[in-house]
Amino acid sequence: MRLAVPRRVQSFGVFSGLIWPPVKSIMSVPGHSPQQGDETKLMNFEVLRNNSELFRAECTRLMLETDKESKRMQNDDNRRLDQRLRDIQFLKKELELKLEEIIVEIDVLIALQSRVAKALEACTETLKVSVVCLEESCIMSVRCCSASYRRKHLPSERLHDEVDKELLKEKEVIEGVASLLQRVTEQITEQIRLDRSAKYQLEKDLKEKFEAQCIDNSCLLMTHHSINNLQRSKNTETVLPSLGVTPKQWENISDINMTKAEQQQANSLTLRALVECLLEQTAADMQKQVQATAAAFQLNVREIKSAKSQMEDQLAAILSEFASQERIGEDLQVAIAEREQVMSLAQARLALRRQRPGKEQCHDPAQSQLLAEVQQLNAHISTLHEAAAQSDEEQRALLRCQLELQEGIEMKANSLYIDEVICAQHREPIVIHNF
Image (cartoon, rainbow, N blue to C red):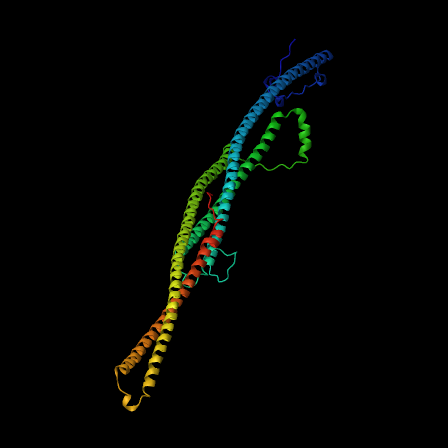
């Protein structure tokens, strides 16, 4: 005979709902015979056995369901972890690409910064030459440069000529270029700092992505056998508190880092284009001014040579004329001496004739001739003395011209030596290449 299943047994569906009512023994109930008591016991035993069979069947079903649910959840976990790993890998590639680009940009900016530093150094050296060239100096030194020697010209030579104007302009141009390059250097340094800051954020993000990838990959590969090792490692590791970042926020963090890197890269490209244009323009300006100064030096040298040559020709003519004037002066002195001798003779004759007897002292033609001769000789000697004095004056004037020409030739020679030799030697190393 099959016994009826209790209502609570028929309705259980989970393990926690398995509640079995206690079975009361009929043997303790008075008024029943021993045979009836045995039947009751058998019925209770049958109920207990049936309940146990049902409980075993429900436990088997429960185990199958929980196993199926566990496997499904593990598969979902594995699938989501795998998707997470792919997302991390995708972002890692994007971050690595941006990191590589920003590193290349930093290297290019560093190279550009080196070029600007070399250009600034070249400007500094050239500026030193120009500044020293404009200093007044009275002591000649080989270490001084062109215009410091030019300031040693005599006062008549210390003129603000075209060379001085070009040297002043060259100094102004180089100072302007140097100041501009200094500001450019500061801008490049600041841009490198910003690029490195973006690079740091990318590297930090990549490092965190790598750690998260390793952790999620370990979670994906984790099995029941690896739990014990994980439990042991928990005793030594410090677990950081979760920040509660949403997936959207997680993506935005990397997007923000990449956007900043892209912005700094674009700024770097703009700055590099500006600096390249600036280097080209400043080099052209300096080359043009240096060439203008060199042309002024060449023109000045030609003018000094021409003036010196004219002075030398004039000096030769003055010296020749001075020699001729000296000879004329000597001839005049000889002529004066000769006229004085003639006049002495006439005067001696007149004196001797005054000794004639009283009646013989006649004013005859001979006496008249002697008197006229003495008078004429006095006039001739006076004229010759005036000519001799004029000759001496001419000689002194020619001597002054000679000294002035010799001084002028010496100044021109000094100026020519300064501009053609000293200045050329010190300005020869000035070569403005493209920066």
